[in-house]
Image (tube, rainbow over all chains, first blue to last red; front, side, top):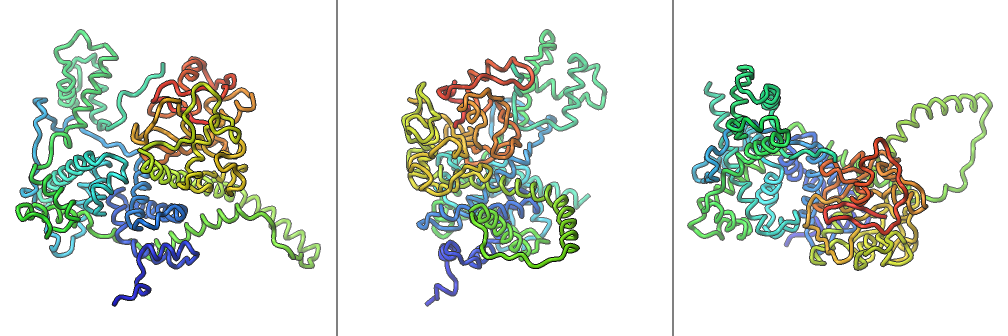
Amino acid sequence: MPNPTAHPTDEALFDQYRTGQTEAFRTLIERHHDDLLAFLYRLVGDRQAAEDVFQEAWVQVHLSAHTFDRERTFRPWLFTIAANKGRDYLRKKGRRQTVDLSAPVRQDGSGTATFVDLLEVEIPAPDAAGLSRERDAMVQRAMDSMSPQLREILLLAYFQRLSYAQIAEDLQIPLGTVKSRLHAAVASFAQRFRQVSKDDTSRESS
Amino acid sequence: MSEQPLHDGAVPTERDQEAIDAIVNAGWDIDLVTSDLRPRAERLLALLGLVQDAGARTDRVLVDVAFLRAMRQAESSPDDAISLHPSDEEAIDAWMLSGFDVARVPNSLRTRVRQHEAIGALIAGVVPRNTDRNQLVDRTMHAVASIESFRSERMRVAPERGFRIPRIRLNDLVSLAAMLLIGTAVALPIMSSTRAHMRQTLCQANLGSTALAMASYAAANRDSLPVANAGFQGGTWWNVGKDRNASNSANLFSLVASGYADLRDLACPGNPKAVTEAHETLGFDWRQLEQVSYSYRLIPAGTAPRVHDDPHAVILADRSPVVLMAARGLAVRPEDNSPNHSGRGQHLLKSDGSTEWTRSPVLTETGDNIWLPRVIENKIRSVQGRPTIDPIQGNELPTTPLDVFLGP
């Protein structure tokens, strides 16, 4: 039978911290370090900025400790705070997407949509041997070119694995909007990843 | 009337801007545009649909509108023109609803769901390299400790007793005085700047906590913003601590009164009169105007603003300097910043839970001054320079639902 004190839950550790055990907070930071930093890196697209936001998120966790609802789980709460901080960062940075008027646009104005069929997109299997640095950079390039709203919802669903209802609560948007926005986000990512992969391949062959 | 940008989304590339300038400067005559920019300029003209409309070429409004059209087309090109295959949409829904468990997804969708799983793995990727894990954890712990130490320092009221000055000689005293002078001259500006930065950081964290509290309040109260009264209808709203129906701060205080927020979250470190203990308040409101650290959106009677109405609407900010002056019967300067941060700027909290630091109370996107109702802003708009106006009466209300007006 597992010993709960040997590997306490996040909530138990946070309780300990709230009663003054500082080391419990360090354990929490170390426990979520990899996932949270990767999440923020994907969200803000810059390593140094991700580390800054990482710190701000934990400071906010500390300052909001008394508001944490013990009935909820710690991890989604932490990621919600981190996503808010990431959003603040992106807004402050005032990143504005640059578009090229020479880029192809709908010629006929008919609004005819193009479907992205994932079965036609070459995506490495999850069990493929470790992600290479190049592939990781390609993923980041594809994500950076997405709009912040689509990037955020894609991360909350596919990285953080929150349910539709949790995402709706976190982003304060209706459930139907979550679904349609996530569908658009996946389509956008798949198309951009395919384009980035193509660019990469053609660069290598030239 | 001030000129507003027609859009605030994407911007054209530098090369496109050159082409835009070239075609405008050429009086919309494509033949006068240099050859290197001509293809882009032609593309631009095609997008604008102006090629056949020579008569309107010099119409500035038409140019702006046409430019906006072009930007919308260009902005909408990548994401609006594509959508996910219906089977993939079905696969996402099934995967999400199964709790991300492929085994619980119908067989017919499993192949597609595995593709989605693969995207998840791609996105999860790897932790950024070259990051010293322990160093970041140490830095984070240090940041938390610094914030906590700063907060504790604010709470300390009495010096330690029993401190004795050791016996010293005159030479020691002179050396010590010289060192202190030099040290102080060097350290004071740094300390002052550090303390201001810490106050700003803490204040922003306060708004972050308040955003979480407001979200919880909204979830339990049909998406409503915190309210303690039925809204205002021409009556006074700055009678802090006297009558909850005549005090806008009582609306904000309802977050504390109903247990969603801690009083400390609503005490800006830059407000020397801020209170952090419940007994220093009335339980339904602060005791006096000076104790209130943040100004909250004024809600007219008969309206029921929801947190989702406009995600970018400003609902809370560092306290208004205009209300502080006007309540004393003094003339106000509408473009002053909040006194919470020595007039350098103020934090804003928006409906979507995001916070922002601004150096002016006039919102960039709308030109709206958050300290005043539109009706007064319109009156003073024609005044040049830095106008002062007669004090407001404390019974004014937002002119429209989109008019941001905060008090006290």
